Length: 404
Image (cartoon, rainbow, N blue to C red):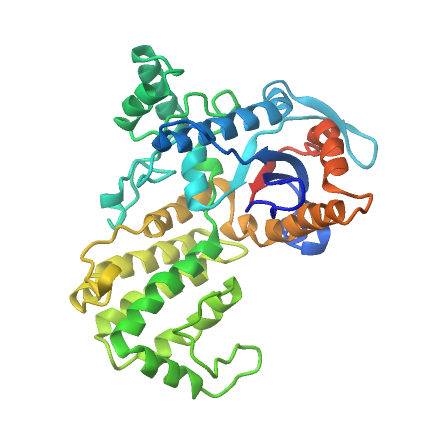
């Protein structure tokens, strides 16, 4: 999210950084304030005549900025650095990139893949609905493809390089920031973001139910439900809500299956229930092999019954026309949750809820103070963090970044 445009036309992408080896229960507390502002990445206004090249230039700039900002982290990952613990004992520490919290379009930009392509696997958009995980999109594979492209064309010839990169489903960035970072691979550090799967329920599951039973019927059935302590009660219309928060995305899921049961086919209900089970299980704070098997089984159940949704004709697009495919990026990303948990730990620790809070405390409030003339403005804080923050934040065996 950009910092709001205020006086002086100050617009930027904030880059937050934290330490991954802090205990998860502490890390998830909003009051812990474990994320700090590292840098403000520029939001580019491109005047290049070819408009379709604007995105390439913006992506290249972000990678160049990250390359500069994370240079001390890269050196510490390669060579190590001696740091002291609270007891005064020295430790020889290394700082690999553990996780990068980003939304789906941003993750594709960081992985340097083109549009309609998975950021963590080799899947194209026509393969997003298949019931298995594709081969991981590894760093070595991407760098090998970039090496081939650079041997054919000059990276500074933007249009020619971009056309050649499209043949490999890449976005035109020729020097990814992670290329020389030890043990860093986008298929590993691009961790799944659970709130986006709750939004997927609102964007897709909710619409399927509305198209099945009708908007007025669904609103009525939910409004007459008995209020239960601890659960959101919707006494008005939910089908016409526009600005919906993440908490409402989750609250609606408590009722959706119950109010539609008996109207669509049993396979339709099983498909939706399987997605609900998957989202619920993926939020676990600890998972063993049995839990992972149940998680994968829930997703397999959805794929086994998903055709009932298309047969019912409730998956629709523009003009209320039926859609007979499963080109849904988040559906493909679900296949990566179980492998990501095995590699980077449970997915709940990478939630953007904490970084959203840090976004307010570390960025928006100081920016507001700058505009109101208070001394703790964003300019002074940015200057301090840019000079010293990189070294004070790598006090552990790993770190992760969250860019809003």
